[in-house]
Amino acid sequence: MAQRVTPLGLPQISHGAGFWVVATAFLAVMAYATVPTPLYPLYQELDGFPVAVITLIFAAFAVGVVISLFLLGHVSDWMGRRRMLSVAILVAALSAVLFLLWTEVPGLLVARLVNGASVGILTATATAHLGELRARARPTESVIVAASVAGAANLGGLALGPLIGGMFAEFLPDPLVLPHAVFLVVLIAAAIAVTCVPETVSPPEEPRPYRPQRIAAPPHSRIAFVAAGFGAFAGFALFGLFTSLAPTILIGTFDERDHLLAGVTAFSVFGAAAAGQVVLARVPLRIQLSIAAVCCAVGLAAVAAGAFAPSLAVFLGGGIVSGVGVGVLFKAAVTTASGLAEPGRRGETLALIFLIAYCGLAVPVLAIGAILTVVPQSTVLLVFATIVLVATVSAALVMRRAPVAAAPSRSV
Image (cartoon, rainbow, N blue to C red; front, side, top):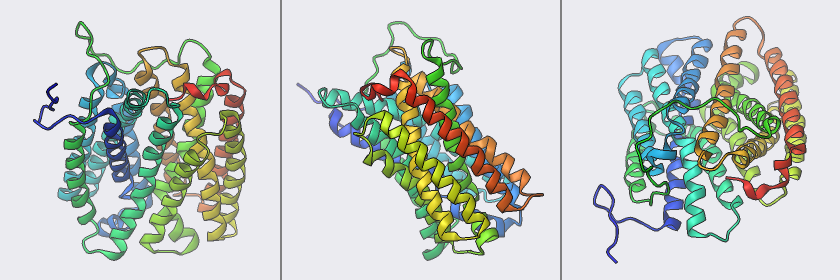
């Protein structure tokens, strides 16, 4: 049998190898999404804009995610996973070009908007593609493995980005140029590699008319789905705080101006989230949700206490512990949403849960940026931590009681 070739004339790889190619590409795009985190003070120093502008730049990313999820996050269900993955990666590469050519505030806003658009196209598509590739490569294996790899690529990439950005800023020349140039090359290579991955979606017999994402929960178990969305929203609010304002908090509250430390701070939260997902992958979902509730409660209390003390060690420790809780909670939210999805609409349902999550990334951060102009950082962090604590713990307890929590085999 002749070997299949890709549209670029390259040989098509197996489903098993394709699984890891997609996971690596997923990781790379998500890492690039958070590379700018420790670079914001450098942009601020270059252009002289206030802290509120940092939250606007970050929010532009989240807005890009939300818009693209609404418009394009679900279309891989009929246009094909591989095609939409390639588009997502190339859009991320375009944002790298914008960062290189346009460093003023309008350019940063546009670059982050485009970067967010790439993530919005990618997340649900890659998550669904990984599950389907793994199912064909190893049909007898538990689907929890694919779910864990997808979660690790998602949050693991978000964790690596600030660390990489911090290392570029602290140890290498041209920190506002070199990281974007390096990732431009990496992303182009990833886009080429993804063309070699097998497609897992059969094209419809008749062309399917385009429509935006339907904003509707699955028709059954709405309470479980709403709880999953609520947990995803609240959890990503915590990620948004550490991704957008970690350097500002370190400077304003702890008088720490080290760029690498800013990267390590964000890395520790996302890294803990990814590690929690992997370590607890085979633990029953109900127990995972109990662990998530405890970690969110303890960790967020420590974040607030560390800001008030002030104690950097307590603040970072709280971020790590709450990161574990939020990571497990988010994976449970994705598992719950996927388990409730109707046949043939998994990509659409996942797009909705990611849409809700990234709204949580944008809205609270914008509010925090505005409030910080008139209220001390420690007070803002206390109120924020309290709200997120109540929201995440409540969501975990509701999902724990939901019927789908007893069936982790229905995950992504």
